[in-house]
Length: 281
Image 1: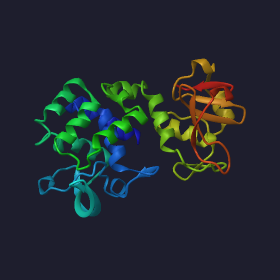
Image 2: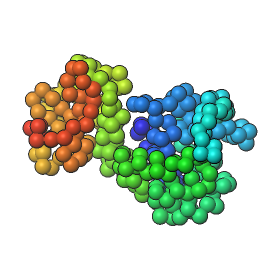
Image 3: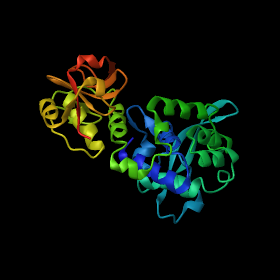
Image 4: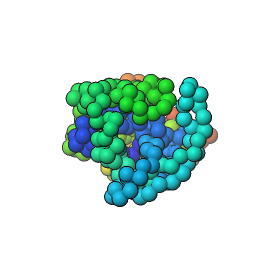
């Protein structure tokens, strides 16, 4: 999940009323593959598995179509099929297209559950409406979307304005989301390449960059240049620091870090392990 995707989801929430939390859950469920994006999302910028229609021809956000092998649930059985999917010019174009074109036409625009979701900015109701309107063939589609909302706390974006997000209200959320995107990435001493290898301060620097915040590369410099606050006052997105190690505070007693050589980026509990929190926001 990138800042561009979150901003596009919030734009569409303001413009069309589609709850941003559900939009982001769909991206994760439709396009997530391990710690990265599916080939369809990576190559063709199609984040929602949107099938091709000749009516899309000429749309300025559409680049064309391509054929992919996929699976669909038919009569309770999962079968493999070949299908034509829409190719978009960018991930943002795909997100906007979903709201401006796809969900603004039948059978979605008149669906009672979707209309209710828009009126109340309710991602859960939006998920139910999408399934009710025939968006997906999977019988567990609603449960899958809601599980993603639970796991990544995506409902926090419902009703959030793009202005607030850009002003920094959601900086902490963006930092945590960036850290979550690196779970499972190997620890590499001196590593600074997301998705390939990071050390502890490489992780924190990259996560902050995703929120548009430039911080020093090394842990001691990060601690020295930010504002140190007691662990009891830590907020999600803050850096947790002790001599020689840093992590991203998630909330509660949890943090995400690159522990040591031979390990991978992971969640952990016990923030008392650290000396203080460091804040840049």
